[in-house]
Image (cartoon, rainbow, N blue to C red; front, side):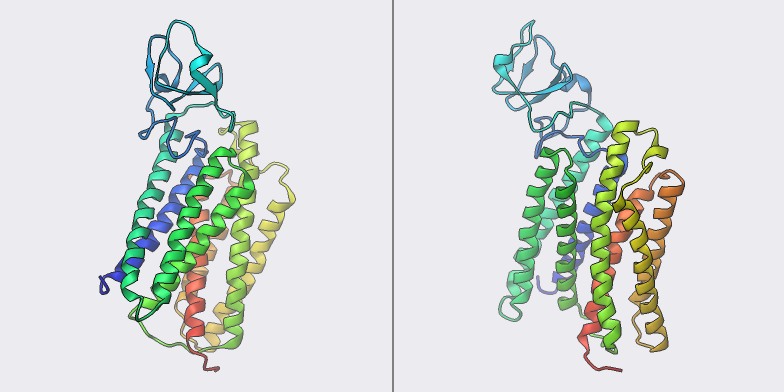
Amino acid sequence: MKKRFPLIVKITLISLYLIFLAGSFVRMTGSGMGCPDWPKCFGYYIPPTSEDQITWQPNKTYKKGVIIVKDKALYVATKPVKTGEQFDLENWEKYTKHDYAVFNTFHTWTEYINRMTTVISGFVFLFLLIGSLRFRKENKWIPIISFVAFFLMLVEAVLGKMVVDTNLKPTIITIHMVIGLIIVALVLRLLFIVSNKKKTYSHHTLFNNLLIISVIFSLIQIALGTQVRQFIDEQIKFFGFENKEYSLMNPNLKFYFHRSFTIAIILINGFLYYLNQIKKLGYHLINWVMVLLILETVTGILMYYADFPIGTQAVHLLSGALLFGVQFYLWMQSRRNKIVT
């Protein structure tokens, strides 16, 4: 198990980024409320595939907890019920957590696959935690970090439910995203500890300090991005998903700050790249930082000026999460060796 633990950590990291990818696809397609309840979907463990399954019908049997759509409202079966010719409120209670009474097969299954990705990742984290216990005598930080990461995954599950129950409340989504990035940092720290690659790098104080700032800037930028995304979602609800050209019409202050803040991020990371070159520090990951930064900037420009071409939202979010991870790992490399050049 010890020999395979670095591989387990890598698989855990991949599973995390798959969650980011699945979540970005959910936001891109507007499928966030594809399932009105959590952890089930319309009261089913396997989501419905047609509107008939969740539309009230006479002379039909429904299990307890099943959610139906009736008169543009959601109702939950309070007990197993066999319907008659008329709808009987005695057997149903109105679903009051939100009023999003819409069924779309694509949205429902997109959200369901997103949830299943998270569930699978949860089991991977459990396996990671079990494997980390073998290191408790030689390095107590490995099981401690693994436990904290697993605990935060449980917190993320609770937040996922809150996101659904509050009909995609912006604050909850932002917290959900930030905690996800903290988990990424924890898993990367594990990877750094157990990695067999013990290469040392020249420590440069300014480079190291600017890296810390760049990581914080990326975290702030991603948090702002979730707020901007919420504004876009509200525009889509008002104008319709097919009218994407209105998604950023009359944007709020958060959008302009998010867009302008990109300049600061480009400048600081560009200077880090310059320092790495002229001081010959040897940090190859800074090249990936620049690639991801360019990718994130280009997709941001395309979304604003080309009315959200397909895939750009998913790439934008994923590249931002990857950028944060690469910067954090680069910072750990930088602080490993304290020899100032």
